[in-house]
Image (cartoon, rainbow, N blue to C red; front, side, top):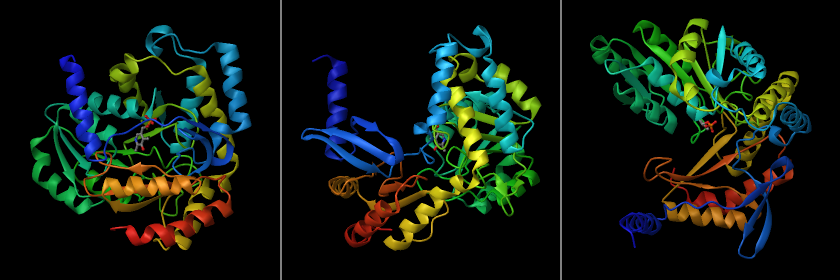
Length: 393
Ligand SMILES: *Cc1c(COP(=O)(O)O)cnc(C)c1O
């Protein structure tokens, strides 16, 4: 065995012994949350409660038609970076719509949500600067922070006071400072305390980046978690990133900000400059998705309503979002329960470290607009009777 294969073998065996090895399962997705999973004993039809396609727009006829029409007219791929090959006209339209949705002067679309964050952070923040990051922020914010090479301090989850104390202590030693957080936390389903963060950022001359990958298209009539008060006021945020791969049902990521910041990002973000533009079909699908949810605010609200119905029956606290975590602690139990759910006809993946902190392996239920009430009830009853007794938090 080569030393490389030996290395890989050892690593895999270590992960396997801790129930932390991950495998890809062949799964075909259908409409309304149906998933067909292939296994050793044939294919099984399941209802998926682990998908971020919250409005089922990836399967929507209008969205698919728009994507297909764009492929026929413009081709399958983009041919290169936007700065070299030329900027596709669909980008301008999508960026206008996103800026409008978020209440900012301008927007720029990236290849994915991950690429947006790891492109934006190091383009604005460098060696002599300070980064404060929520301890439960998404992996791409930590990756962006590492690429920026600034002094990076985590603050306790959703604890603006803790962030404030760190700023008071360290802000003066840094040229620029930035706070990084999810707007809606992807593995916990709770919302950032945005108004508190805005206040401390303003007081301490600190920029604030909210990654709203899960909030956009859902919360506050689709405008996302960055709207405060009764949900109609855009918070005073310098930088708002997000993904077009979740409620939009498409693919891509974005930054919404002032015109000046967007102009700088266009000339400085490496993931924009050195990576190929999105396929025209993905841009067209995102445009069609915005058309749909802007016309139908009730659709945006449905996933959270479904999550609330589930939580009520299962005996869990009322959720703020369509993401409902159930912490079971160790990866072995979590995997076993996920497999029991699969036997009951439900697809709910086990979320294990390092995606979540050690000791907090969990089931993470996500709810979508098209889920049938009867399926939600059946799932909730199973969770109440068979899973709740095994949870640790
Ligand atoms: C999913 C997610 C991303 C990544 O977006 P992709 O488009 O899938 O790359 C980034 N940030 C958060 C908070 C996410 O949940």
